[in-house]
Length: 223
Image (cartoon, rainbow, N blue to C red):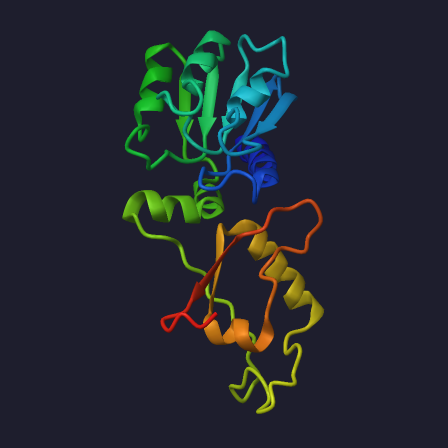
């Protein structure tokens, strides 16, 4: 059952895509007697974390199992430590997909929960949880951004006609996928010549989602 509930937590975490950067995507599911009592996710940057949103939706938390996709935070940041509320809620068991690589947490959250008598299980759907936050993990571990390269190229290696008359090379499915990436990542980077030739909006056209930061490489300052 652990995999089943953690998969639900991961899907819950995905609801925060495009809204929580640079924070990680996190989902939480509160379970008692194999029944889901509440779910929550990190909804926006600086807002309550997933565990808080899930626990605050239920009046019956004592003896429950909390499934969370990332180790609960144990320090004060924009919000108080999630471990404090978990302990206060008298949770019996906490199932965690993966530890938080942030040095401010990184095992400390687990330690606080265990010292409070809460059983902790780590590593349920760990690879899936890490993949969900590969951008966050990359920056925390290496202090460099995660870069995704997108290019529309014909089979013979062209990106446009000589007269630059081609509007699109990719099909609608590919373009829709690009819009999802624009919502997922914090910024979109293009060269100055792309701006001059195409004048792209570099915005996310999915209704209700946010636009990435628009970055231009322009060594001659011509744009």
